[in-house]
Amino acid sequence: MKRRLATLILAAALTAGTSALAQDKAAGVTDMQALRAAVKADKRAYVAATLALTDAEAKKFWPAYDAYQRTLDMTNRQRNRAVEDVVALNKPLSDAYARILASELVAADEAEIKARRTLLNRVLKALPATKAARYMQIEDKIRDAAAYDIAVTIPLIK
Image (cartoon, rainbow, N blue to C red; front, side, top):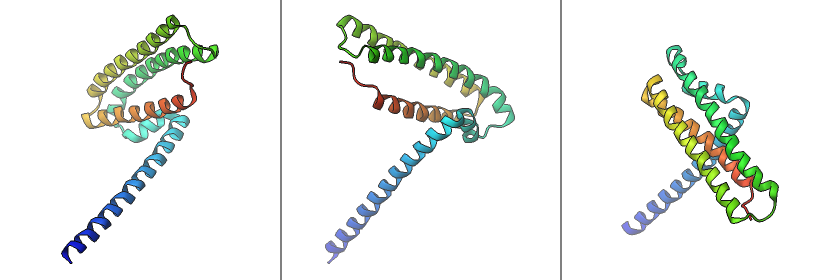
């Protein structure tokens, strides 16, 4: 009897845990969709609303944010140019061109990482650590959503 009751309790807990996990995943998808929509409408306003900066924090934060966005735009253009060149060819690449492409993509990643390190250092000076970490998390989510959107639309090279 005790074993049967324990089995029922375990089954109920697993079922509840699974449905809660499914709800969390569904909420995550909705949150990511909301994030995409908010960023598309106005990324700066989304960041401002999410961080709830004081006037003093905002005065220090926004110059770091703006500098990072300019660098991010540059690295995204570099990455996009490399991928667009490949897509435009629409034929198999030579080994030499594939090496150049791979190097350009890694260079764009490295430039972005360098910019993120600079951003983190500047944001940590401008904001309390919890807000700085929250902002970095926001940037990660935005970056990941954009990377996913790009990954599903860009074909692999031939």
